[in-house]
Length: 78
Image 1 (cartoon, rainbow, N blue to C red):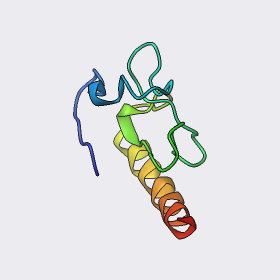
Image 2 (image 1 turned 90 degrees about the vertical axis):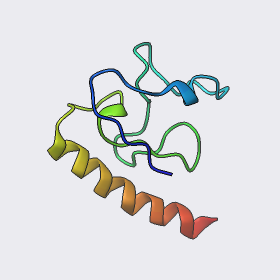
Image 3 (image 1 turned 60 degrees about the horizontal axis):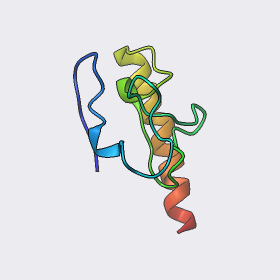
Image 4 (image 1 turned 135 degrees about the horizontal axis):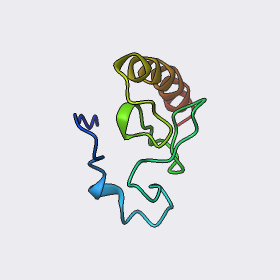
């Protein structure tokens, strides 16, 4: 799935009760910036919803590219 959001407040309510420390104290998704994978295996986060994002279109595009490559690698392992 793809979750699209525009704004400065992250819309991450569906991920608050995952049983995993997925969100930081501000509600942004924690992930590995080199793969874009979150602490939940197979769940990737890109763009403004990421805790370490600079919230710019250019960085979101780069995030998407990194995630796409790593999603392909993940799918090949399942």
